[in-house]
Amino acid sequence: MKKYVSIDIGGTEIKYGLIDEEGQILTRSKMKTEAYKGGPSILEKAVRIVEAYQASEEISGICISTAGMVDTEKGEIFYSGELIPHYTGTQFKKVLEETYGIPCEVENDVNCA
Image (cartoon, rainbow, N blue to C red; front, side):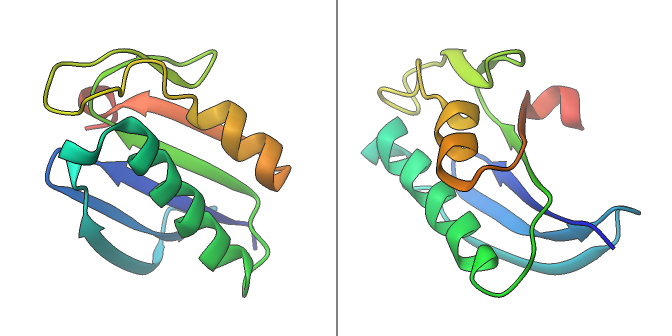
């Protein structure tokens, strides 16, 4: 059964876990976003989350729900308010696909709800 890393990035917490192809939550956890550290810090947290799952699981893809305005084709933030400094331009899809060689989809959190 295929497994996916799911990451929900909010202003206060990053909630993440492993889900299967039927949408069942297999694991879940959370960490502080520390939004004040900015976009590069959040991207690094996403990289570490995927890395931790890839160490013990065969991952088929990554899905990210995030605050900010998202270019879903590029999988990057094209606008973000001041809550997360330097978040505009954060390239989740490019970085994660190049790092792990698996598909990554990124969507605005409101659309995911």
